[in-house]
Length: 209
Image (cartoon, rainbow, N blue to C red; front, side, top):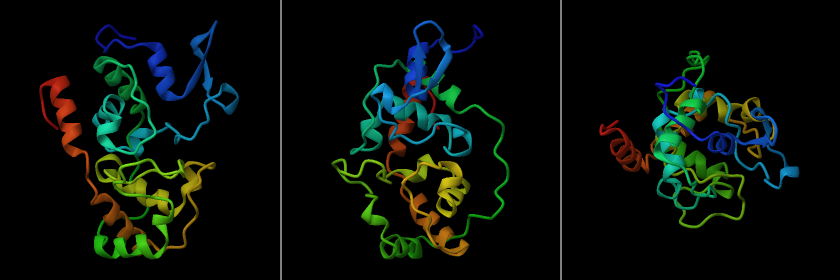
């Protein structure tokens, strides 16, 4: 790692990325965690996050203040410094620029999207702003999704979730592109936690997003 980069703990990076570090090989021989490690992989894949998450600032805020970004989340608060959080976020957010979306995702109607969210039974798995964790842990609360996810990624996720994660519990929904656009517009309207991200960034860097 270059001297100009933020210093970080290799173990902190390994844990956040979801890797098991071998006693002899360290990060060089890290591997994905499995159930055999005693850590059930209920979290989503952390690959290509630069195509999914709006920016690295959200990742930093999530690592430092998970309970503030989502009240009912299952992520434990990490014993991680701000410098380590920035280094982990930079690592996770690295990658080539996202390609242009094949299908335009903008222009949806949030009101119609909310109606779809109810009519298609999305509330059977997902909550929005619940104060206690649901029993069904593999469906996240969707509060603040508008500050977390890129619209093009969300469109493609709803259209074909198993293209991104073959092991997801998210079902393949039968919606046309216009309906997906409406659903995306509704979900992106939920921007809870924006003030938390801005406060964390300001505290660390002295600037605002």
